[in-house]
Image (cartoon, rainbow, N blue to C red; front, side):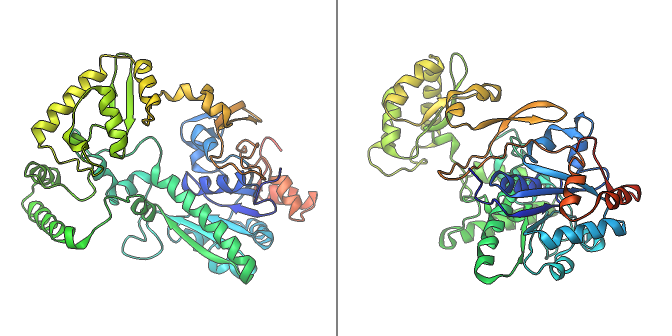
Length: 433
């Protein structure tokens, strides 16, 4: 089956994670995505290389694309880009502030060549405002959007980021791809292209559905008090962590903060042979879990739930008892009764176990791709499944410049013209292609 975006042409000028992930999502949906790389390639290729111009990071976010190497600092390189723009539906950009304009690949320039072009741009902080000229990566965005501080509550006092994935990068890529498909749909109605802006900063804010919700009648005064204490503390050279610790000790809970110490039914527990998770978000499930564990909890008498209804000491004793009970059995011994009762649960899995997990295999969530240099690559495919369309590309990430000649031929260049561009170093042909 063809992908739902079959026939859509995308030129991808992005590097690192966010923009490339957007391009990979579009490629998975059938778009023809051509990655335009500078002479040294996407910088992500050069980070912890496992072979010449190849890294795990690059491979993981560039599935399904073709690669052409173009030097935008040459006249020939500009001509190649302009020809590509004239035939493209979408351009993806992730240049640092001001770079796209200097290179002549900004929206204002390229939209004159192709008024129907959809130009999707991802930056660290967005196109305007006092931070707009700042550069940044995922860790910076996590810190400056409050994610790091929120994740650090109740831990060892040192700031913690989400490290499993570059979360603001991946969410920005998803938002970028979502914006593109919406703009493609709108273009079918208006015939016009447009600019799309996403940023790591905006995505980091958007993901915080709990911390960045303020019900003003309840939260405004507390927020003002906390901000006043922070300003006062900083003026005295006192750390923010100390202020937050004092607030917590005084019983002040920040809006949206998880009541970890008083909610034992949404937790990970150590067992005899590993760790086990239960995730109960209503009292029907909590009652079922409590019965299996063998504890009584007065908070479960009705369908309403208030995690703070027990005082801190009583909650701590209950939590400790539940932890002791879990430690007495293996994961398998806990799995059977919780599943029989319909309680969301499961063992904490090691990543390496998942390649051959029966659920992964049943849904074809890991795909095998053939890389021209590295052979078979097993990687996570698209999480989206459609009944009448292919949703995962079966092409591995491209080698640097692998498709330079192929793409130039599609743009109308003859062999002699391609040779001249290569000689002038306006483009570069990779080792394969």
